[in-house]
Image 1: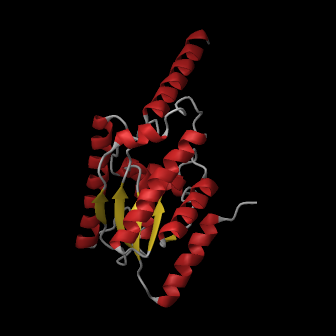
Image 2: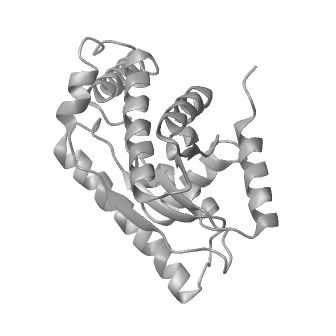
Image 3: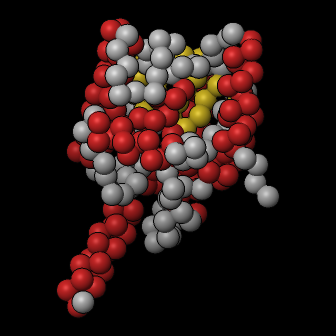
Length: 232
């Protein structure tokens, strides 16, 4: 039976409340919609730097658009902090400004790592390789930057296996000597809140994870849906 990672995170935050400390957290983010709720929630308790490392987004235009949306959302959140105006937000005056760290864009690395796994189903071995690649890079950057903890927004997705992500995060965290912050951000209506925030900030929401293979699969699903509708 898997641990309740959502409750584990709550306990971490309870301990922080008692200690009065504000740890430095490196937050791997896949996109603005997924990070929207995560940042809203965690900025009350951590000094967050978003780590944008997503070489799995193999289309350059798509990568740059998602990065621009991430920056736009962070700027909006930081204005709220500067102006102490949290209208429409689940935030208080304890919310802190958020920084962003851009990693080099290297889709060739991703493609080399998943070579031979191109036809794996979504959520299969190819995704596991991708998760480890991104979390390993985050752990390495966290150690280099002197962060107290690191984690990822990926657990907010209903399509992502949170226990698997947490196990990978714990493993690479142990390897690099930086603690992984457990999470299952989809819980406690986290995913629902991310959809609300996406509408509130008019964020671009994609229908595929990022790689060319997930886009291919999404297009196939759409085609089947259209064909089914035409036959109905």
